[in-house]
Amino acid sequence: MTIYFYKVNEPYGCFSNFSPHSIYLKSRLWPTTEHYYQAQKFIGTEHEFLVFAILQAPTPEAAAAIGRNPKHAVRSDWQQVKKPVMRVAVLTKFLTHLDIQAILLATNDQLIVENSPTDTFWGCGLDGTGENQLGKVLMSVRQEILLKVFKAYQSGPQSESDSAH
Image 1 (cartoon, rainbow, N blue to C red):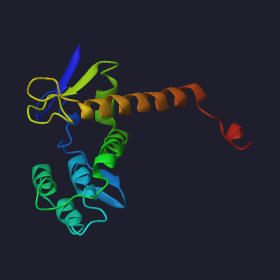
Image 2 (image 1 turned 120 degrees about the vertical axis):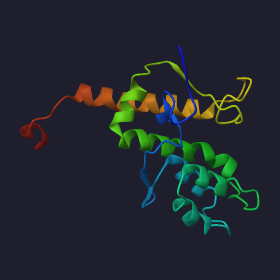
Image 3 (image 1 turned 180 degrees about the vertical axis):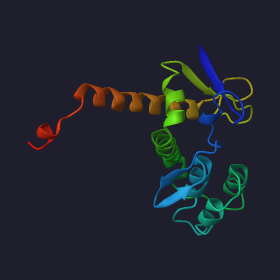
Image 4 (image 1 turned 60 degrees about the horizontal axis):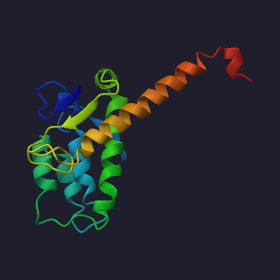
């Protein structure tokens, strides 16, 4: 079974970058992963002042509108760093919020697809042939968290006498 998500108020809406799950990264509390992602476009540029505007944006839609404004040039390495920036944000979100982490882990090894009709990079696009990079990030994060859980389970609880040596 494939898991499709897109809108926050639909099943698996917590997978959306617009979901109301804050993250703490780079010494700031970001209201959503969308706020964080959009702000990173302007780090080290003449438009770095937009980082604060995006951080203060009242909704993820407003943050996205600022970040997508073609009048503002993004950092020169954006195409190279946008996937790692997204991955850090998504990983932080699912490590921070255990309720949605459980939802992600419960998907087991199912394919996760951002069912965006307009985004063919992060989503699958209208015809389903998009790259689905956000779905790939989510599946990668799921595997990383599962590995952390498995390693923690394997090591088992340590007694105080064990940790003293």
